[in-house]
Image (cartoon, rainbow, N blue to C red; front, side, top):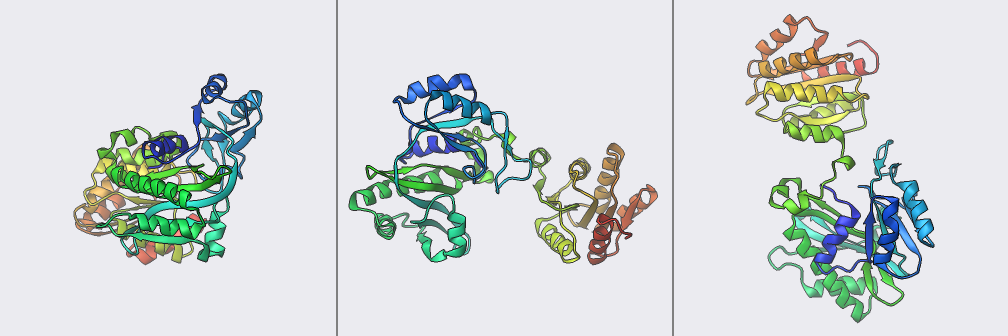
Amino acid sequence: MNIHEYQAKQLFRDYAIATPLSEVISGVVEAESALQRLGGEQRWVVKAQVHAGGRGKAGGVKVAENLAEVQAITSALLGTRLHTHQTDAEGLPIEKVLVEHVTSIQREFYLSLLLDRSCSRLIFMASAAGGMDIEEVAAQHPEQIITLQINPVAGLQNYQCRKIAFALGLTAAQASQLTTLMQGMYRLFLEKDASQIEINPLVETTSGDLIALDAKINFDDNALALHPDIQAMQDPNQEDDKENQAKQFELNYITLQGNIGCMVNGAGLAMATMDLVKLKGGAPANFLDVGGGATKARVAAAFKLILSDHNVQAVLVNIFGGIVKCDVIAQGILDAVQEVDVKVPVVVRLEGTNAEAGRALLENAQLKIVAASDLASAAEQVVALASGGVA
């Protein structure tokens, strides 16, 4: 689960991670009182609150010289959608903006904490080349990225923080600040079951202090039940509608950019199915695992979810009946077809428990469903049908 920058900065402050003074507003009328609470007559930065990076380049971060400009920028941003390189073509809705004092910056750094599955350790990543182009730095100059593994038994040690500080060229006083900051990130990560914490940029101000100018935190969905305070920060409007609907039926669904809808039982089989579709020249429109204990209602919901994607030109159903029986899947498909006006071709491959009974249900229904004998032929047929050909 992702949260907004202003929410992440609230958590940062709880863990002694320095951030600029800021106020979040959701309407132009709130701007004047927000600036009064922040105090001071100076320049301001107005930042659109969306779950995506690249906001600055997309026009979602603007500098204002006075209250009137803050109000004008806020009015221009609220109620619109921001499209960045991390969003789809529709972008994400801007419902809040964050207003902060403009920070006098001496240097910009990058700092993040995440799980590296290749070594089964939490690692800090840091770079003296922080800022908007950190992705390009990582791709073109990986030697500028510093990594630090944390022993899960010993935890983060102060000497490790000093090692990062030395690599970034910080002073002794700044090394002490960085130690406090990194220890706060580490405690926050563990106590709130985060999956990634990123500060980009972490800045050195002209007065020599280290401040988290931006904040991004992702959380492990599987641990949200343990953290109602984090769960309360969820913003469904920033998430994919179909993925939210899938959660209601305990479906594992992820929207992709292709035109072939996929419904499979089992994550491994789903990945193999998507790979084969790509191998045959197609592009999956989604990842959808109905699970091993799927019911007719869940299968029907999954099928309707796939068909709600207007990009889908054909559907591939690939089921290996083990715990879930093929006739249950077949009946779920028929229930969904009766409720939804299906205008795209459907290819079904059933194998395993009650496969013959499942195929018989589909054949007797006299629907335009193509029965495939094996997965390879199923992938070939659905790719042909999605491109307007004949299976």
